[in-house]
Image 1 (cartoon, rainbow, N blue to C red):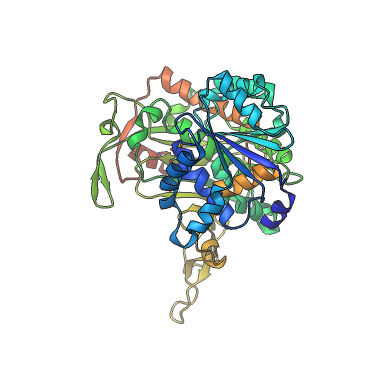
Image 2: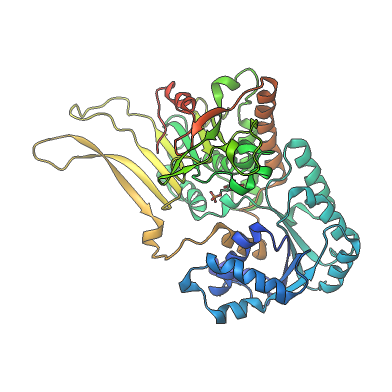
Length: 490
Ligand code: BG6
């Protein structure tokens, strides 16, 4: 698959990175580009044009970058010779985001005969002004694409404003909205699992599936990101994008082809079919939590309100659990239980499809063991089908046990590392493939659904429920599912 994409890549591309000296660039973007280069997957003539206000020259930029990314590259994959080759792709320009003159210098530096990809690794408040400057300064005269990092706005209204401004300068087919979860290998494998396996596809609806669980649990707290995060909260930071995308991929109808347009159309239908959660039903459908001090790997860790720069009276949630319904033919009556939080017991991202029990159990010696399909994104990417099997024993004639049929991607592919999601996404932006990027309508529909929850919280002054760092969230998140006779799978 990768080979095909490399073949399709334009060999005359400039990747122009705004926010090149920021945190995301150092943690994700440049390590991903280094790895792609090291693996020989970048077009030979791809140039990296970095923009930042602080670093004056390419040399100073690279010296700083090398220090930042070296610890993020495995020793086996690092060599000074490879770094020197990678460094040759760079061309740095000092740019003040608000200076018209700086954009004119950028325009002069850009070749109009190459494809210019503008990557905005900046706060979203800069998306619209940057587009306007690019347009006014002549930077967009050649062929261009734009890449936007999440979040696109902080509610439906602001999201529309961003989409409207960006669309004045770029066509939708040239806008790449990143949700890095879509670049994760197992997320793509979910599509293959669903749409390349007949028996899975025919058992994928309310007649066979009892409920679905989506968990995105993190062990990290907010630490240095408090001032950003407190204005956002877990619903906007994780549910509006990553969890909604996972839900769409699980629930959507088969697209007629693996094109961006066909996939987006199906995702939008799911988002539109999500039952609204508002003041009338929020108390039974949503739990909001905030971590208190607790333990992580045997060490004490502070609570959300005690983190650096915290406002001790903050009511921002660091945990959300939701019981959602999709009101369409396929999913009528099937609850989708979603939960995500910071400072939870484990780093775990997984989707669990819980099948219904059989109508009648003929194996009287064993309990009824319903199937479960576990799609685990991290850690240990794998897909496991939990099956009922016979216990190997002469003593117990027909005792049933739960066994796993397992696809272990890490082990079977013989990989020494799982490529980061950004590696896939960079290849696709450069190759001009939008199928793993989010369309304008999808982001807007997702905001519409989340806004209604936020509005209800505000109207009812819903307080966050405390949970201990290192736990699985507030006790009420357990009750959300237990009162339906089910339980979370960890
Ligand atoms: C980001 C969120 O989008 O995803 C962060 O802003 C979160 O708060 C991160 O920590 C989680 O990503 P991953 O790939 O580590 O699950």
